[in-house]
Image (cartoon, rainbow, N blue to C red; front, side):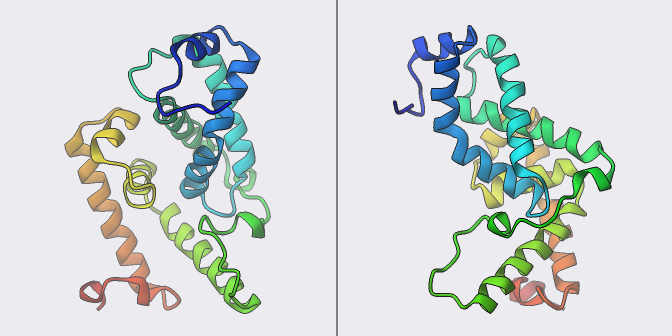
Amino acid sequence: MQVSATPDPALIEACRKKDRAALETVFRAHLPTLERFVAHMVGPKADIEDLVQDTLVTAIAAFPGFRGDASVGSWLNGIAINVFRRHLRRPVERRSVPLDLVAASAEPVDPGASPDGIADGRRRVERIHAHLSAIGPERRIAFILHVIEGRPIEEIAQIVGASRMAVKSRIFWARRALMARVRRDPALRELAPREERS
């Protein structure tokens, strides 16, 4: 059963009552987008599957209070952001897991690429996420939602519970910090816009 962007109110009501089949239908429809969003936030070294699972468990408990002011997808992203914030408060040694080469890139692998090209691309993604992880979580979340996920400012403001101006400011400072780090990284320097290179 497919779930549209605006699911059937009866299906949402069943989710509020923690009906297993309804929850599975709604979550299955949103799972690929949620997994991609979490992967963008935490990078290739994080335990994406555990964070997605934590998000869904939290959503099941919170569904009775879901008012429908936002789409289910935006609501799940808001929960994922809170799970991510908790994740960041854990000690680093409990956050890092071995690199999963399958999840190393949020972008599809070019089937014509050589093994060396694929490995280089994955190393590049890992380095970008290392630089992103040095940016404060509020700015990083806004940046990822807008630049990587392509979400509009208004939606981000609703997801993170901040004003439009605050979101714009976070994106600006995150972009500035990331570009400064990229310019200093010999392996990524060419990614910086020409006018931003020193």
